Image 1: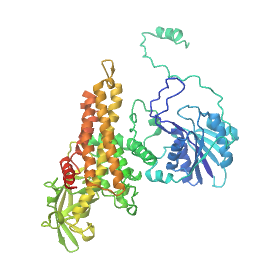
Image 2: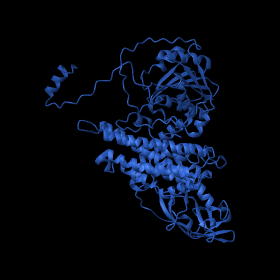
Image 3: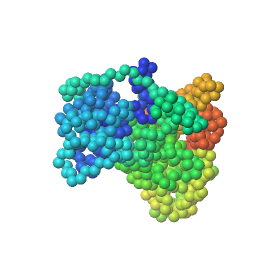
Image 4: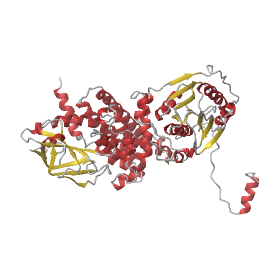
Length: 236
Length: 393
């Protein structure tokens, strides 16, 4: 069985995010980028299944600008067998990603698709669900444990899973594997080749930082608390 | 190998700027694969080694609950430069220096022990980290003047009997396999030195008490004692009387690899100072706004970047076969002296806090100072370079 894993290149989780001065988005130039942590977990799960003999091949897929190839190389260094890079220069929304994944799945025919439950840049938590819908495949989301019983290599599973945090601890890419990854293939394709028109249904109007947390206030009585909740916070 | 620290713990950690000052742009020094490796080792070192650094320094012991040697072995960090027929990766010194820098950045002591062990990565057990290696040439009365060593090896039936002492042996207390130099012919002076491979269980070989050092604590250093220790014939490294050549050529590459140690320490200084000066406020502003502080960090940064360029350029040369003893001595001379100065400045930037052991800067200074002494003191390094330049036409 072939497993396809979708991985996303995002701003590294340790970076302090800044909003661009023109408020069109978050600053990404000269900022460290890495593989989305949930995608790492998804890839790790796929690699463990392959090591357990449940899968014959793990294919990593990433969509976006040319730099996505770096993220794919990390995936290959962790142990994926080959990579596919869908070259899309501009912004990509979950529905477009889902359509591209469907097109790839139609041609690659994997038995299982595993993705992270959400990306830490947009936190959409949509792609996994949308792909399953487009393919009419059964899906399991927020997977904290995946076990396959009674499955042989030839029986297709045809389902998608999106992975949650505590599913596993992803492995490191060691030096021998980094070097082996250099000879693994990354195929490049475009949305046009896959017959998927990319259009944005959403327009980002403005991105702002959340309001700065104000200092707390120490109140003297329950009456004062009720008064503030009613008249200032307006929650009751 | 799996990560030991939970990804979830890392994702939801607040206020800890573990990678806030990420390694600086070094695009001219490395290609993509080397950058990928550097980031990978940095991640491993920060997650697996760095959490133990403070307690290693305080207790003067490596952690008992994890076996760092084996973990580094599983990450294929030992034997990066060792030939493939011994089980190494055969990748050369550039990769080895990258690993050394990142490990040293996490913990100076672990870095030093790792570097010392690297000299010995010649069999599978050493490369996997199951066995630790050590090297001993200095003696209580023969440091810089190592050729005057008194440890002697007398020829006997089937091998040699070794008598004497060795001093300043890094990893001595824990090493399974050691390379030591002894005199087989006192009259021949430098041409009378032979290198031997010693195994821990050999009768007549023992280690004396662990030294209580200023810095690099936890990187165990001790005295070795040989009392009629019998070493079989086949344990000679090289040939009888030719030990000095093994020693000197080994020293060149040892200096190169160790030079990456101070680089890591300088990076660790910047890792500590930059978040501090952004956050510490005086006179209504972060102290990083003040020119004196900016001057200090600029000096620290340029010291690191220039040393780094020197070390990795020489590493690249050594990989292509051009090993120049002047440059091998030069890189560690340069990096070590800069590192001590950078660590002093780091303490100064942190002010009173820099003087407190709760902050990392004190340990960085104590660790950095070692590199001006071990593997040939700065004075010896200057002699090597000056003498060679004087002789060259």
